[in-house]
Image (tube, rainbow, N blue to C red; front, top):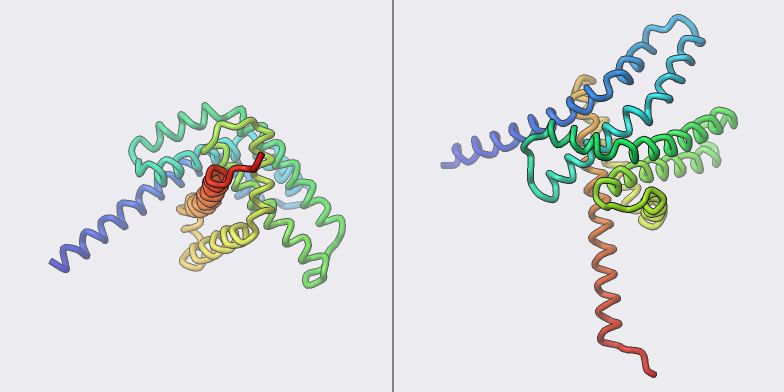
Length: 242
């Protein structure tokens, strides 16, 4: 009986590993032009070629990476909240098409923010270990959290683009312990994948951080919901005096 239980658990683990692998590979395929350009940077012969490839990658991000990542977050949300893991490709494609315009606008906005940050970092010539480097590290974590919260919020709520941007900023600043935890756990997962073998980054490097980031977002959502319900309950039981 014990061996049957172990076999059952092994089957469940294998089943979910294959599902995660499938979603991640769908995401990689949709990002193939960017993946190809990134690999091409490894074979450049001059800095001019490298800069040209980097510019092309940056221009492709809003049109390819952001819509594909948004669709992956939608698949993650569906699996986490509703325990559905069927028709992964069709659901991915459906949400990809439905949210493409919003993902494109969000991608342009966030790509510009990241470009400005990286450009200023290079321009400032900041040394590691200096006081300013810690400020930039905190800003990097904020931008990472903001980006992930935007993906999660875009697939969880039907808010306007501006409202979703504001909400993502508030969540990034207002819940620093979640922000640090999400970025830290995601970084550790990516390091473990690389430590096992770099190929695991290709197989699971997108889906695992997406799951971690959505769970962090959802925990914040549940906490804010409980606080709101508690405040409303107090108002009902403690009416203001006339």
